[in-house]
Image 1: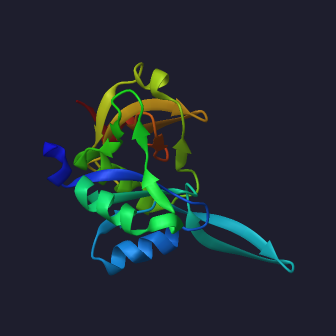
Image 2: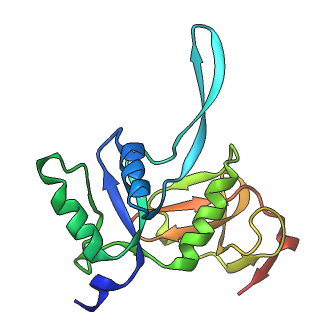
Length: 177
């Protein structure tokens, strides 16, 4: 296939608790990858602290070719802990366009407490206006304006997978696309 050699962002599902181990293997092989992380408040022995954990426990994005991942997965054998997430309609692995992935990473890296990871909101997104953020930590992000938890936010959607919503964005910092 023509797309087997094209470098793309692939959505990969990793067995629970193994995402960071899988990322370490990708890093070792020099493969670009991204796991959205978030802060989590924990209490142990009466002490409260904040730790950084994967925002979605079994999701990793890998920037490589389909052929490379096919080969990589086949070498894992019976201990295979990762696989493509499939688009059932098109019968191919889910890929994310470069610009959408850049926007997603930019939002995720802010790690604000009120950034939201959402599922199944594609119906609502059609009602929103497509915008670009002009200023602030999300400058350059393109998405759809939606009201989430009583706050106007910019949402970047990966249909069939998930969406991420920024913190509140002032309407003066938005331009229609």
